[in-house]
Length: 79
Image (tube, rainbow, N blue to C red; front, side):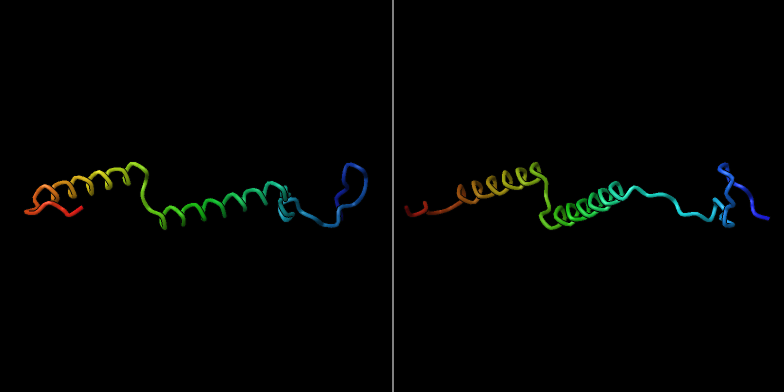
């Protein structure tokens, strides 16, 4: 026998456990776009590499080595 709903109509044998979960499409779309943006940002970070601090340290080291080499020259550079 079929169970009656609160309104008095017979349910068509639907079990609440077998019903799909209701999804807000706007929120799902935003979550999908957010995940895509994060993946793109991660790829960009690996492609372009270093933080500003790391770049500054590398630049300071390059400048220090250049000064060391310039100071060890036997002849002054031609201008």
